[in-house]
Image (cartoon, rainbow, N blue to C red):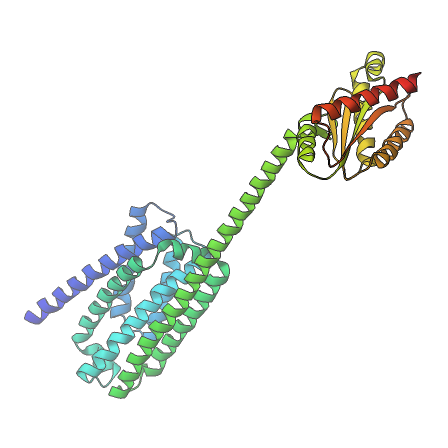
Amino acid sequence: MDELFFYIGLAAIAALVFILYLIKAERYCAGLLAPKWRKRNAFLFSVTFNTALAAGLLYLNFPVVLKLILLYVALLFEFQLVFQGKPAEILFVSGVFMFHIMNIKLLLSSLYIMAFEVKSVQEFEDDFRYNILLTTVLLLLFLFLEAFEKFTDQRSIQLLLKNRGQLLFATSSMQLINLYLLLLSISYNGQAYTSLTALFLFCTSVLLFGAFYTSFRHAVKMSVMMGYQAKSLSLEHKLEQSYQNIRELQDSVFIDALTGVHNRKYGMEKLERLLEEAAPFTVCFLDIDHLKQVNDKYGHGEGDRYLVSAADILEGVFRGFPVCRMGGDEFLVLLPDTTEEQAEKLARNACENMKSLPFSYAPSFSYGIVSQGQEREKGMAAILQEADQRMHAYKKAQSG
């Protein structure tokens, strides 16, 4: 009777530890993979399924290898049914659980064999201490999962699950280890145990823990690093886009909306900077002839077309120099390190090009040119006034 109570108590402890482990495992996996059902339903299914599976594998007289294969297939089935992860994620997470189940059992079994001098598998499974061993395995699984959750950042695991290359590396390494554990089970299942065998199995389990966590930590670190790299590239792209937007905004401040050339604000600021520098420069002040008459006779749409065409000609002729629309029909071209003779030649070219425009009226420019030397004898207002006067003198001479 006492022996019966002992086994019942041991079974109750094992069941309690098993349920605690299932709760812990279900909650942890729910944080990594989205449950397909409500949490309560997913947990009830998990407990019922795993309890039935564990009882069946424990009491059915199947070979150890077959039990391990059935356990892994059942884990894959449960993870696929309960959670919404991709096949690669399901394979990895279920493989991690399978590794800990097999390797912890191998570790404790080797210690048990050395401590109690077990000679065979049959003797091992018939001894009451075997039930204590299974209970201890469940307890250690719970403690391992507790430590795994505490010392491993869940966000890092999620990054690993999203990183296809690193997930493939970690899963491949883990499955090779699991395959080796399965081969060990096949190799030593029907053999007599010795202390040397037990020592080999113990050392092997310790080394396999090292191999698993080394590859796992490497994959996690690489995933985190690649995650930061992807974030950095994304931030760089956003920053570059922001700079581009700022540049476009700045450009829009200095661009004339109709013609696309620089506006008066830009021309005045550029002229002011040229005056502050020591190098000589020349300004060319141009006026589109008869724009008012074109507007009155043909409409403002045609007048706008006249303005845009004139601006295009100026940009083509004065290539490399800033062309600015000062307002209405007036344009200013700033020519650093350019003599008055060179500017005169460019202005004449612009006037010749205007004549080639296919308009029913005669498009033309009037212009005035003023040079400023290093002595800076004129200010901004004086330069613009003199250029305007020369432009009007040119216009008067052309019309007369």
